Amino acid sequence: MTKIRHPIFARVYTLLTSLPDEEAAGHRRELLAGLRGRVIEVGAGNGMNFAHYEPGVDGVVAVEPEPYLRERAQRAAADAPVAVRVVEGTAEALPAADGELDAAVASLVLCSVPDQARALAEIRRVLRPGGELRFYEHVAARDPRLRRTQAALAPGWPRFAGGCHLDRDTAGAIERAGFELVRVRHFAFAPSLLMKPVTPHVLGVARRP
Image 1 (cartoon, rainbow, N blue to C red):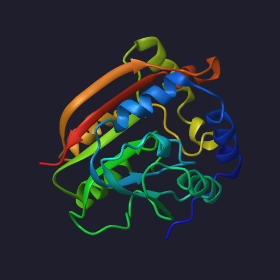
Image 2: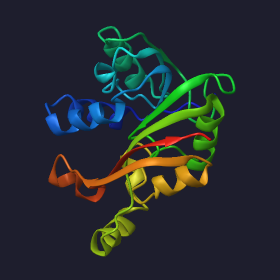
Image 3: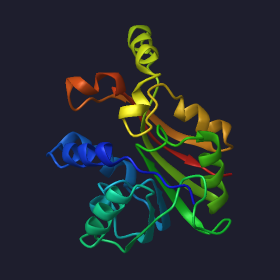
């Protein structure tokens, strides 16, 4: 298994997400609203989504490769309203059988996977026909000025942001991976001025045919 370690980024991310942010919490509630059945969360980070899963979820397999974040996720799982099992793994090799799961959740992770197309193919593999992919991601800007800023920062950004890429067309990649886009909401969100380059976000639902 590929070992992924971002010790400085993991601690900074945990510190930032520990600050109260009702807007971000609202995005996570929207992401998971009405979710049902057996769920895999890809790149669960430090478990920020866990508190927002609803009772209709039968159980969550939370996959996280980074050791510090995975340990934090295990702590968060203990207080989750549904059963959450945190496991080591990567988006490109998910620990599930073909068609085993009803839904997948990708939350601020498809920006940082090394091979986005391969990760999406793997998500599609583990979902049953009709299964849902819920996604919440920052993406390439549609505004030309911000897009130029992202392009200028793109070469160095992954080195200090845990492998994050600023300028991915994630909704387009989901569609190209063979999913049907059911709902996509584009919006601007930046918790601080330092996060201006990652302001453009998408939140939505896609379905495996």
